[in-house]
Image (tube, rainbow, N blue to C red; front, top):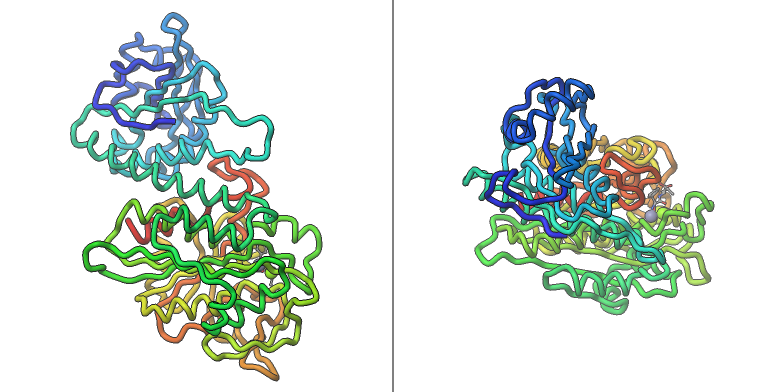
Length: 492
Ligand code: BES
Ligand code: MG
Ligand code: ZN
C-alpha cells in the first residue's frame, strides 16, 4: 500500500473513503471536518451528531455512506481533547485500516492529518503516527496460511493544504514507513517457527536485512574470544551458535557511541531443567530482543543519525541433550568471572554475560540490552509495561520518557544489592539464579556483574514481546516491542 501526503484540499482528492474526525462532545465541527460537513450539506452535524447521536468517544468510528457519490465518510471519534496524544492517533488508525481493508471496494482513502489542527500537535509526528498505524496495524503473519490476507486498500492519502504542515507531514510519513517496516520485520522474525529460525538463519537474516556492516562469528571464533558462557548455553543443540555484530558508523564524527544487545535464544526449551509444556509453547519468542536490535539497525541505516551504533546478538538454542550444559557446571565467562549453573533455564543471562562484555570492549559510551529474560518480570508487570533497570538512573528515566512518546511503556524495577544475595555460590563467583522471588531484579543484578563501568540499561520484555490477546493496536502474538523506543532513543 502507498501512503503519501498531497498538498490539496481533502475535497479535491478523489477517493472511495474520506476520513475526518471529531473530539468528544463537539456539536459543530470546525477545521477540515467542518469543511467536509459544509460541502455535504451539514450531514455530519445534522445527521451523524444530532440524529445518530455520535459522541466522538475515543475509538468510535461512524461510517456514513454517500450513496450518490458512491463513497463513504468515516468519522473517527478522538475522545476528550485534553487526553488526546500521538499513541491514540496510531492505535485509532490501526483500527481504522482494518475496517477499511475489510471492504473490497475501498481502494483509495483520503484522510485528515489528525492532531495537527485544533489539537495543535506536531504535524510531522502526527503523520508518522498515522503511517505507523496503517502499516503496522495491517500486519498479519500469514506465511503458512493457504489463504493470504488481501490488501484491498492500495492508496492512503493524507490531505494537507498548509505548506509548512505539508512539508512536515511528508517527513513524518517517510519516518513512519521506516519505523513501521522495522516493527513488522521484528514481528515476522519472532512469529517464525524455531524449526526454520535458528542461529544460522537468524544471522543470515541480519546480514541481508540489517542494512549495515554485519559480521557473523562461528563457534571456533567465539571460543577464541573466550565467550564460554555463551557457548555453554548452546552446546546441547544441533545448531551452532553464532555471534552477530552489526555496526553503523555515521559519516560525520559521531556525537556518541552506543551498543544495543539483544537476547537471541531461538528456542528456549529450558535445557535439562526442561520447561513444562505450557511454558515452552511460546519459546520461539525468546529471540525477541535480537529481533528488536536487528530491526532497529535496519531503521538506523535509513534514518542515518549522528550516532555510532553497534548491535550485538549472541544467538543459540537452549536444548536438552547428552551434550547440554548441566546444573552444577562451572563456567568461566569472557570477563574471567566464574558462573555456577543453578538452573539451565536461566540461560538468557548467561549468554548476555558474554555479549555485554563483548559490547563493553568496543569502548562505547552506553549499552542497552533487551531481552525476554524473566517470567518474574511478566508476573510483575503483565503484558502492559516492560521492565527497565540498570546502573544509570538518569539514562533510565530518559529512556522511559522517550519511549512514552513512541507509545511504549516501561516500568523501572529496583536494583538494590540485596536482590543479588540469592546468587551467592559456594564454589564460583556467582550462581546464575537463586530462586523465583524478585527474579527480574536478581537477573538484572546478575547481568550488572559483567559490566565494569559503562552506563547500562537493561530491558526485560518477557511479558510484552508475545501476546496471547490483541493489544490496543489490535496486534496478537509477536508485538515487535522495543523497536519503536530504541529507534526513537537513538535517532529521535
Ligand atoms: N525465556 C525465559 C523467560 C520468559 C518467560 C520469557 C516467559 C517469556 C515469557 C527465561 O529464559 C527463563 O526461562 N527464565 C526463568 C528463570 C528461572 C529459571 C530463574 C523463569 O523466568 O522462569
Ligand atoms: Mg529459560
Ligand atoms: Zn529464555
